[in-house]
Length: 289
Figure 1 (cartoon, rainbow, N blue to C red):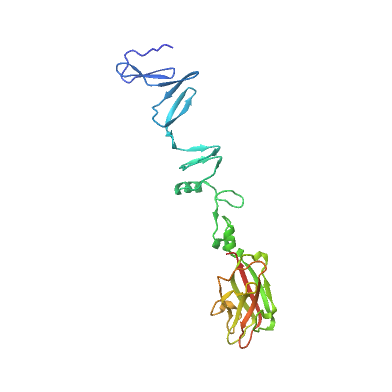
Figure 2 (figure 1 turned 120 degrees about the vertical axis):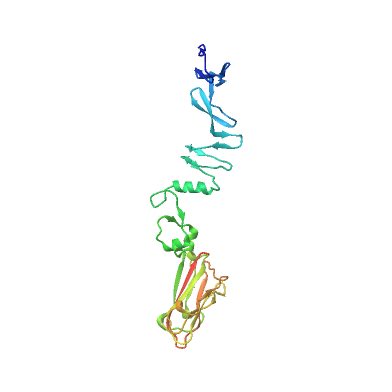
């Protein structure tokens, strides 16, 4: 189609024909639309693209650069909301602002504080029926046992009260007088496989009828390792029935507290009250280190 420029144009007046635009500069009509020849026809380049802008199609025959979408050979810059509907693979450091990913995002080694806050706010809180963001419970929270919104790690479970195993040993029955001796009462304990690799973490003892004058002193001896496991013995004070009220608490030797499957432990009563107590039960509690 022949060009038919307006007569007596004013300065900066524009004339457009077939997607091309000219502007009157005071002396002549200046073509202000770039044209790139591409195979079957011309492709119009609109706007005022600058270096590193990535061109996008804005019509069937027109491309336009955008300052919000750039590539300098090293860094891809996207300003605004980016929506990824497939898998996003990134092999170097990437800064994600407000990004929607409908596929998967893997291989992430670190997230800055701003992105972490954004992701956390966007995710639902997980519960028994909803997938989403979830916090790992501490040992104290696992011990409380009432939190329905946190997950328990194997380490926290092992370190909580639910990771403890207690063995209760009747050394003397309720009507028998307590006496001194190694393997008192003729009993010993075999460590089961459920306690393999655990440490002795708590000890306690009680009597049925309190003794008077002096203390009852109790040692835990590992027959297999030929070692005493307590650096300070369990004591039951005069006129008391339980070691929890003892003036001197028992102390477990941290260097000799471990057990494995098949270890044999015995209860040694090293001292009794002047008027001995009757009945004796000793508790041993184990937990993974």
